[in-house]
Length: 191
Image (cartoon, rainbow, N blue to C red; front, side, top):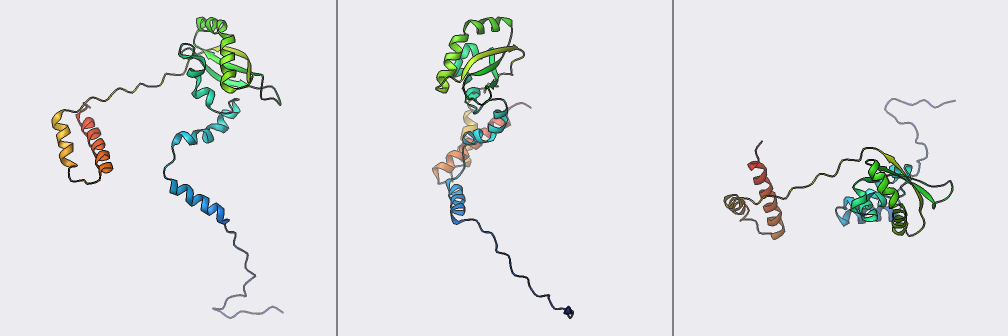
């Protein structure tokens, strides 16, 4: 026989499930991380790019980000790494696939091949690469150059200084001066 409930009454409660709570150390670590303040984006790029670069054989972004330092400015101007292929089950003796800009670049690359392999292996600290294969194709566009800022006219500088003169805190005052100068430059540019 099942008990009938009168309207407005609640059914009996089932035994409550235990609520999963985060361990105290996890909560403490999270609060510690937030107390550290902003994190430099450069420290996060390795974690963010690792899955995509891992598919191409780049275990880290080091070879890509340090390519001009590894092979030199002359060679990095016409050759860039595409992928690194390791033999199955090994992390040494890989083949580095490069893209070169033109046939003359491939000939120069062939001349400097032993030095390139030695520099790459010296960078990694072990015999990571044993072969290099080159494919001719378009190079990625160069990074845009940042033009130097032009100095502001004296009256614009004086206007910024006059507007921030009431601020007492030196760091805030410096930040506001920088912002004011940027706004003055933007307003003076032709549209």
